[in-house]
Every structure is written in C-alpha cells, then in structure tokens.
Length: 128
Image: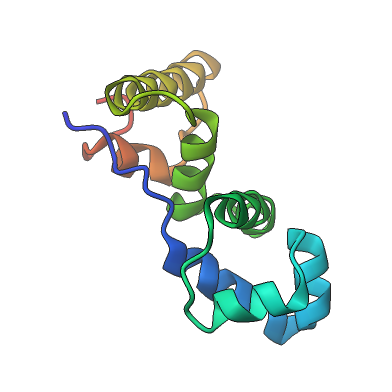
C-alpha cells in the first residue's frame, strides 16, 4: 500500500482563508494566521507563500479546519506538520505507522474509526 500524499494543498488552505475572510474580515483572519493583512491578501490573490508563511497558514488551517469536523485535507496537513523534518522515506513510514495506531486504538475501544481513515490508508475498509 502506498502511503497517502502529504502535500499540504495550498489551494485548500487558500479556499478556507477566502471563506474565513468572507465570514469575518481580512484583518481578523490575518491576525489569527499571524500575517499582515497585505501578506494574507497577496496569498488570497494567488501568490505562492514562503515556507514560513505556509507553515503559519497550515497551522491556522488545521486549527480552523478541525472545527466542523476532521476533513481529509485537514488530516493530511496535520500529518505533514507532525512528520516535518523527516526524509521522504521516513515520512511515508511515519504516515503508515500513525494511521495504524489510530486504527488500532479504535479497534481496541470498539469505536467506529473516522471515515477518512480508510481513504487515507488507501483501502476500502478501516483496519484493512
């Protein structure tokens, strides 16, 4: 089984930021991300963020994206941050290991695993 792609989807973060700005304000979202309003505006206009900016945006996305429920793109971003700094081969092994732990914990607790688990593992069944 190939591990899931952990690339933080910049477009998913950009769309979440656009929605947040529409619900509140550019200044408010920029403040919660830790960017200047102009920096956030540039990102929303399609500019490619610097690494440090992308890290701030990803952390904001994880915090904001987790509010309505754990979406797969939020999980991918979270895993990416958890495994940051590992070489690609190490990240792949880390993803497989972390997803296996989540699956095992649900089986031990006899609870239903989240829907994203099977999709992220690349199989049709949780625990498979």
